[in-house]
Image (cartoon, rainbow, N blue to C red; front, side, top):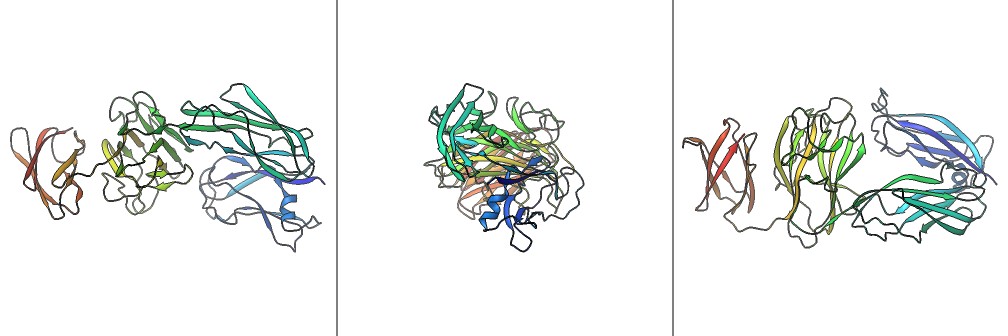
Amino acid sequence: MDEVRIEFDYLLHGRPKFREGNEIWVRGNDAQPWQSIYMFNPDSTGKVLNTGSLSITDGLQHLGQNFSTSFQVRVGQHDSSVIAARSYGNGMTFDDVRLYTVQNDLQLLAVVSPGNSVCGLGSNTPLVIRIRNSANQTLNAVELNYRLDDGSVTTETLSTIAGKTTLDYFFKTPLDLSRPGAHNLQIWVNAQGDSYRKNDSILSYTVHHQPLIGQYPYLENFESGDGAWYSEGQNNSWEYGIPQSPNINKAASGIKAWKTNLDGNYNDFEWSFLNSPCFDLTGMSNPTLRFRAAMDIENCGMILCDAGYVEYSIDGANWIRLEDQKKGINWYNDTTYKIWTVEDFTQWHEVSSPLPKGNNIMRLRFVLMSDPASTREGIAIDDVEVFDRMLVPANTLVSIGPNPTYDGKINIVWAAGAGTEMQITMTDIIGRNVFRGSVTAQESFNQSTIQTTHFNSGVYLMRIEFANKVFSYKIVYL
């Protein structure tokens, strides 16, 4: 019996909040229950996609149904706002519906391994693909091929695959993915008598070999290259190079950094990611992330419009937002949504946060998300550090910065018993007192911030006193 298939093109508008109901169903007649055969992909908004060849035969047989004169197909979506443009509003447009039969059909369903981003790969990485004989007839002498990075073609043969069978095929010839960075993989299959060829290949599969960092402290200033960081996502504007936007127009150190659009604004309806190498945090007591940033992200007050934030993953597939843990420096300014949404903070400043403990391999990524309205210069990242913050004795000044300071904000990190008072005095270069204040320790490890935006450019002397100890620093205001 021939297979009955359906496929069509579709376009998702905006970023719909997809839930159950945004899918395709079939039923054998108008008195029987519906069976879902396809869920729409909400991650490719604004792009025309094809459903691929969907088996109506399998869908009906799953419920024990057969074709009849009242057989039906149903397409559903549950978003309600008006479609105003390709990437604005919600909903879906679809066209070019095809209903047809196939006799023999070998499908290349997926690349099982390696994934799109993998840590510490070598020269003998297994390649595993998932194939399906979706028709009823057995297929013999199936040819399976791959080409890595435009190299030579590797061809292997599978002797037989029974009808209606799905299996994972392990290539005997492994992949050499020892070079860090992006690798392009082309895979295709061939079976004699295959009557539907559109699902026989995956020709643009990318594997990112991410170095596994095991020596610390880690510091990447991006001067000798992109640091094996890479970007991806919807309407992605992240670029590596020399920042040349009107306001964010230099790196924090040297001349190079990562930024959303090096010479302009980020994109409308962007949902993009800047991905780190992999970090082996085994044995770290207090893993910490620190970096320099410049930001200019649209702020809509109480309404969420554009946002930046950091996520981490321990498996490369599931991502968790790195939230404000009350021990960071310059961490999210919007504590409701746990994001950065700050305009004109375009001078480079230090940002840091503890990383979750108890994990071995961890990846990080910076995320930018925007709506379809106004855009700004976005996020620039430089001087990324990952290190084990050692616990320090009480009554110790740990760090003070940024120095130089662009906006008059100075962060003081210090260790003292809760309730300890710190006295802060600042004088100008000729000895005049220009600031006097105090802060009180809330816990054993503290970050205190003073704001002195009224100071003129120049060098100032800061005197810090607590627990019968005195610390002196020269602070440069730019």
